[in-house]
Image 1 (spheres, rainbow, N blue to C red):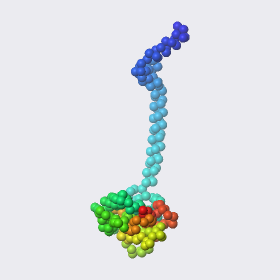
Image 2 (tube, one colour; image 1 turned 180 degrees about the horizontal axis):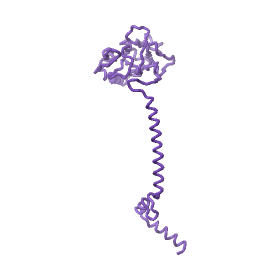
Image 3 (cartoon, rainbow, N blue to C red; image 1 turned 90 degrees about the vertical axis):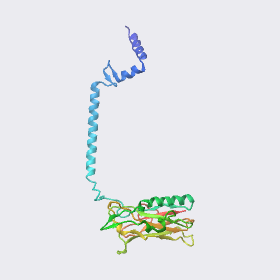
Image 4 (cartoon, helix red, strand yellow; image 1 turned 135 degrees about the vertical axis):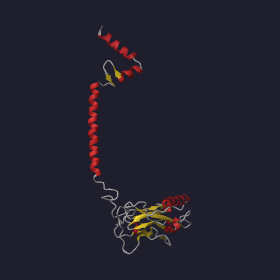
Length: 262
């Protein structure tokens, strides 16, 4: 048989192959004895390669994880290092306020949601004492359904970020509170100036340090202000001798917070 006849015979067979026959031949080719186009020896080699490769990769990962876990202290000891050991941050709820009806309703909802866990107070260990946060200390700002909002007044709730083992130091050694100082800023054009009142003075000192006590509830501070139809800012900062507060406005991760009004 001539070469051209062999070529035509070969490709005529290919052309007559059905889809199922082609798939079956790809799975197993009896003529070449291949499975998915690989011989038995080829499969042995590639399986051995990947077993070695992923085995070494898993071993390397296990070694790295083991070394990492040796540096993690137990939960009751706390972290070895923290970037917030001097400056616990402050968070205000709501973070901004407008006298629009939608904003008022949103602000009330945010405060209500924040105070929900405090409606069922839990006792927890604080030093040698047992503490329970009383939400009624927040005054009108914790009174449902208004939450301190009226035609000319509104409220924000300020809380401090938890920092393991941080103990506040205050100027008045006999004081029971870490004072929170809040005042209106960017309000020079307003006469009279807005009145900003910190209802419950500050954060109870006995609540610190935080060491993952069971049932721990962060102390809250309520701040009520007026002139809600005007545009200004409320600046709150923590008055403790062992915190550093930057003079830069809106500096993050420090013991101060700015709330935009209107």
